[in-house]
Length: 343
Ligand SMILES: [Zn+2]
Image (cartoon, rainbow, N blue to C red; front, side, top):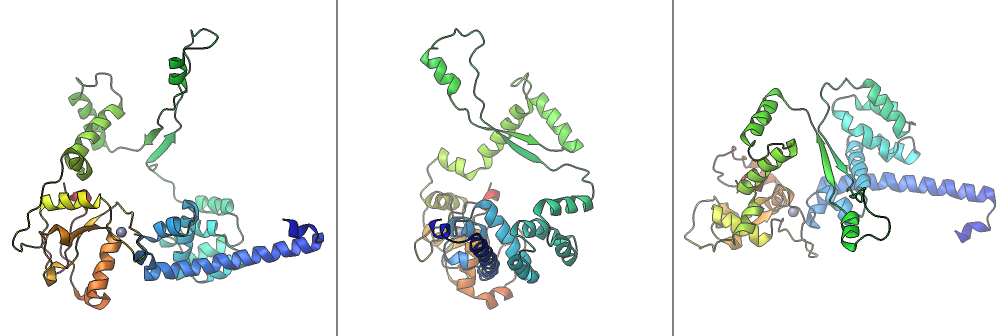
């Protein structure tokens, strides 16, 4: 701050304008560069499963900033004039991120022309005025702040017993308010469920019944819960079998990899992705890799599984390999159903 104290008002204002211009130039350039990182999937080599993870974990952008930058870079890929607008200040990242998802259903040129020079709020109003009425409100989940129990109304003035103070001040976990529109069929099923569970929850609320059903489903199908319940069985290595990975081996691999993508970048960073994991043959089955050897099977996220396929088979050859039909046995590419579907 001190370096500006000795400058005239005019000089300070001029410098501020120069800095703002430099900042807009840097933003436009970083958006263009980010688009190239995503186009080449360069984040994958660094151990990130997607561009969002790379922006937040590696580039240290906030979640909102990462969201705006990714939307903007994708929009600028198809409409490079966005970069000049960002540099000139006629569009901001907030505004581009707001209109970019609308490009699929509206004319992008018209949207960009309408958004130039407008604030985010003005663009929101412009979009809202042109949006068709929503017949069905979207599902909503609202986080409610943790409640603190008030002291009992009949409590004596003066210092209360320590145990009571602790209880009153103890933070409670947050709760979530769900709101969604149910079809007639779902409504009937929920009413039926209430009857079935009546003995258990005679005065139960909807979350009692839903909690029961969700818990029951997860106890049967959640692979992590299965693992917690029992240690993974030893996996015998047998003669070379088919390409399908047996259920016991899947459980063992899941346990060994901790339900997380096993890709490790050259600088030692392990991918943190836990969603949509797939089983990967380290040595592909098509060239002799075993499906019954735990050392040859690992968990990979979709991005890193694709990366390994590109690395081993090359882009050109990969394009020639037909993807197996859903449920059919794959001949060349070891394509495994996502973990969520293992059941
Ligand atoms: Zn990964």
